[in-house]
Amino acid sequence: MRLSISITVLASVLGAALAKPEKIRGVSDPVYHLYLQEYPKDKSTAVLGPESSAEYFNIGGTIQSANTTLYLNVGNDSTSYKTLTFGTTASTKAWGLEGDTIITTQGSTWGRQLNFLVCKLDGNYWQLYLQTGSATPSGKTCSNYQTIHLPCLC
Ligand SMILES: *[C@@H]1O[C@H](CO)[C@@H](O)[C@H](O)[C@H]1NC(C)=O
Ligand SMILES: *[C@@H]1O[C@H](CO)[C@@H](O)[C@H](O)[C@H]1NC(C)=O
Image 1 (cartoon, protein in one colour):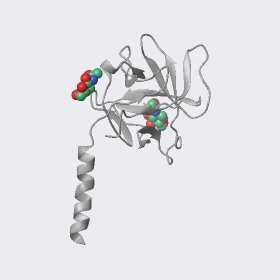
Image 2 (cartoon, helix red, strand yellow):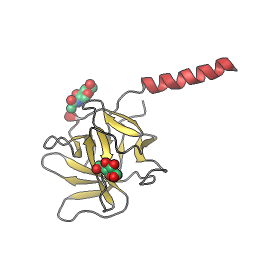
Image 3 (cartoon, rainbow, N blue to C red):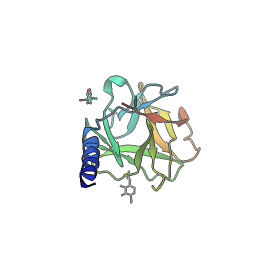
């Protein structure tokens, strides 16, 4: 009995330790196989962009870049779409995975959400927002109801 509990604890500790950073990507046009990263122009705005500049992330409560050590945080916008930025402190601890899909968790400020809005910036970059409803900003080229995923469950 005691032995089996120890093995269970050891396995879960090892599992957490062995989980490796993963890329996160869009899967539908216009962000099909564009990858999560900071916008090079301000090094803060979260965007989907080229695979060549993709960052790797540790996911679980927070989403932290293994490349920059910055955390992905949800803004306090009053609109249904919430700005996502990278910062040195983790103000958002609501991130989780459902299969290979990035979500905010049920008990969080936003509830369980898996939709994102993307809006075109310069170059092959799309600004990423968490979408809690259906609104979109006017005067921008956007695509609603995107989801973002790990490349594979491996
Ligand atoms: C992020 O780190 C990974 C793993 O070390 C590396 O392959 C990748 O090129 C890095 N990305 C950037 C944008 O530096
Ligand atoms: C949103 O507001 C909370 C509470 O005031 C704050 O801790 C957090 O840093 C804010 N988030 C951002 C991204 O500014």
